[in-house]
Image (cartoon, rainbow, N blue to C red):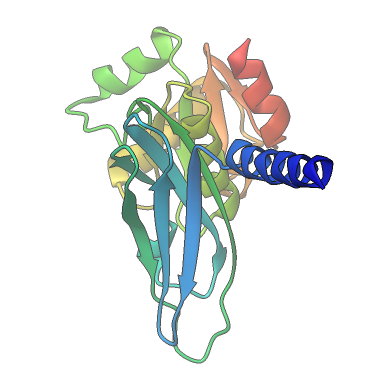
Length: 208
């Protein structure tokens, strides 16, 4: 009888220990309602964390696809984002998140004053990413760059005429008449143009 009690106690202890060991440092909780989908981040650690969160999909308002970086206090649950589906459309989506003690703001929709500033970015060997609206691959690339904490500067040519001119001026200087807007996302790394990107291979190259 004593052996049975000891065995039962040991099994319970092991189960509790195993359960605690499997608790993730940061968890994402998804709450679905009729007219919205809400995501929360739960920090199960004793230190503050910063969470990077990005939705990829379709069927939501455009603002839903913007990456989010938010600080989550120790042992707290914090609202990350609320997604509002478009009417009469069944949303289809996946999400990606990562966390650290401090995520740096590494992607810049850069505010520039003149052409010299833009050209100087290439001369300095900066990692430049040209993106456009309605480009899932662009959003995914920017999310991967942030998640891997890779410094870069992003230029959305759909939102800014100067950035669009900068794009074509850069292509012209590189004598690449074969490059089209449909090739975006396009990257300039250390003065070299990269198109038709395999995102995983590209990120691995930048990490070296």
